Image 1: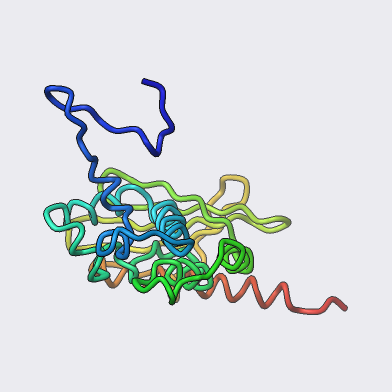
Image 2: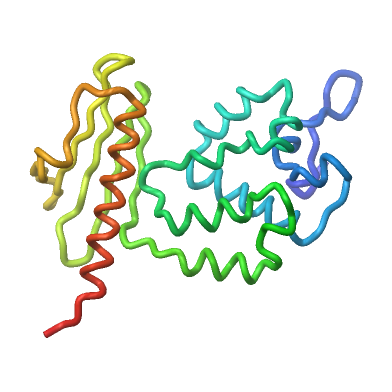
Length: 217
């Protein structure tokens, strides 16, 4: 059968339609509780798609697995998705826009797609980071910048309990350690490393903003 992807359903034994967990996870609280959909319902689902795109399938799948037995309860209570979690490089303005779109109460979300679109459009993204996930759980972020050297940030692990953060500049493939004392962090827990990374990316974001706002001579 050829079908719109959003309407497609898996067929199990005996030709019975199976409702995939991915569709259940996308239901907003008001649909679960009252089977009632509004414009704000669409805003929630759009925000959920953006949340997944920002954080990646690995985090998405881990959260779904955690709540697989009670996904509807987790959605209604606000436990899923975890609105506190964002990849460290995601700017705060973008986090705020997505969090508002995912509010449990429809009246607290954006009231229209244009309002949500404006909030996303006004989210300032000074550095475009590209992420590479590694099999051991590490992550490499790379960014190219116009008329400046590139940047490389690495989250690395030697054991499950020991993590490190490295910060490099990249000049045509030649890496040079940047601000080693301040920006590098070694032999810490994963939560400490992620907190450090969030602070590191925010400092870079603020630094780029200040250079943009500095008037030319």
